[in-house]
Length: 514
Image (cartoon, rainbow, N blue to C red; front, side):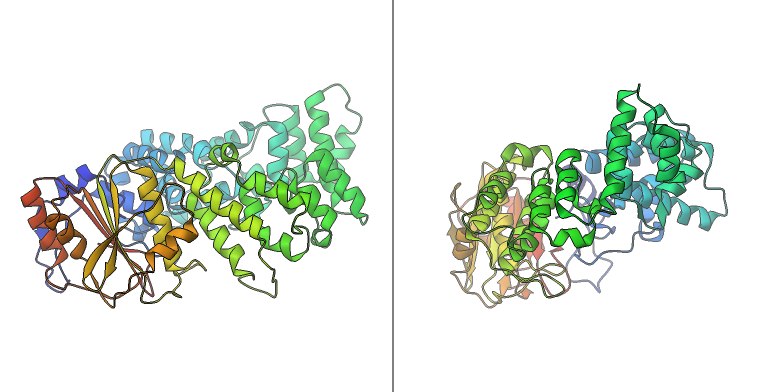
C-alpha cells in the first residue's frame, strides 16, 4: 500500500503521465514528500514494496537528498518522527539513513533537529551503531570530518540520558554491530559521564572489568553505584560459571537475558525456565520452537500455561507495540515445526498455537481506523502452497491477516472472494480465528484475477467505496476493462474520492502495489 495520504494522491495524481508508453497503464506523478514516505516505508521511492532487503543509500533516496539540500530538512525530520517514532509500519533503518543525511547535508537548524531526534529513534544500541555507520559512509563520500562537536554531543547525550542500570544492561546485551562497538563510541564521542554510575559503566566499557574492580570495589555510600556494580559483577560471573544452578540464581536475582548467558548454558532446561520469567514477549515468541524442541514446554505443564498467559496478555502486547504481523510470523514459524536453518525440529503444542492466534486477534485492536469505506478482493485459491517471499508465511495466511485487520479496524469494510469471473461476499466475524478465515478464503476457485471485478461489483451493487484492495497469488489480467479506467468511470458515477491500491503477491514481490 502506498504510504501517501489521500490528500497527496488527489492533489498530485489527478492526471496520468501517458508519455511512458512502455508501461502498462497510466503512471501517476507524485511529489517529493510522497517519495520520501515511500522510502521510509518501502525502502525505495517506487510504488512497490519488496520483501528483499533494499540497498539503503542516498543514491536510492533522491527525494530525501533533494529535500535535505533544498532547505526542507526539518520537514524530513518531522516526517521521520511521525512515521518511525510514533509506531508507523516502516522499513528498518530507513529513518536512520534519513536522519544521517539531514545531520550531514541539511542546514544548521535541520542538523540540530536530526541529532535531537536521535534519542527518540535509536531505542537500542543497534540503531545507534547503524546511524553512526551511515554517517561514516556519507562523510567518506564528501571528504569531510565525521566526529564534529554536534555528533559527539548527540552520542554522549544518548548514553548519559539513560538510567544507569538500564545503560549497564544495554552495553552488556548488545556489544557491537555494523562495525562499531560501545568502546568506539565512548572513545570517539569524548563522553563526560553525567554521574558516578555512568562513569563506572564508561570505565567498564573502555578499560574492562578488572579496572572497575580496582576503582569501585570499596565504594559503599552510593546506592545506585553499587546496584550497577553488582549487575556488572553478575554478568561477568555468568561468563565463567560451570554450575547451571548458580547461573539460574544469577538470572533470577539480576534478571539477566539470553544474550548474556553462555551458549553451553542455553542447553539447560532450568536455565530456560529462569529466563522465561522476565523474557520480553517478542523474544519469547521467537524462541517458542527452541523451547518446545528442548522439552522446556511440555504439554500440560505449568510452564506452558504461564507462556500462553504471557503471549495473550493484551496489556503487555499494547505496551510493547507488538505488530500483528510479528505475531503472525511467529505463529506460522512455530506451526511449521522446524527451523529455517539447521536441524532443529519440534511438535507444535496446540495450546501455544491457540495462544498465538488469540494474541494476533488482540493485536488487531491497536490498528487505527481510517474511517474510509473498503472493498477487499481476495483470490488465493490457485497456489495454496505458495509462500510470501522472504518468509515461511503462506500467501493464504497473509491475505487472511490483512482482511482481518481491515475488517476489525474499519466500520465499513466488505471482503469479496474471486470465483470464476465473479465476486462472492465473504463474511468475517469479529471472533473468527485466522485459521477459520483462511478456510473461508480458499473455498472459491479462480484461474486468473481480473482486478477490475471488485470495482464493477461495487458499481453494479451501488456501493460507495473509498478504497479497493486486491490480494492475489495468481497472474493478473485486464479482463473486461482496464482497472484504472474502470476506477475512473466509477469515480465519475459515484462522485466520491477513491484511493486505489491493488496488492498482488508473486514470485519476486510481496505485495506489488500500483
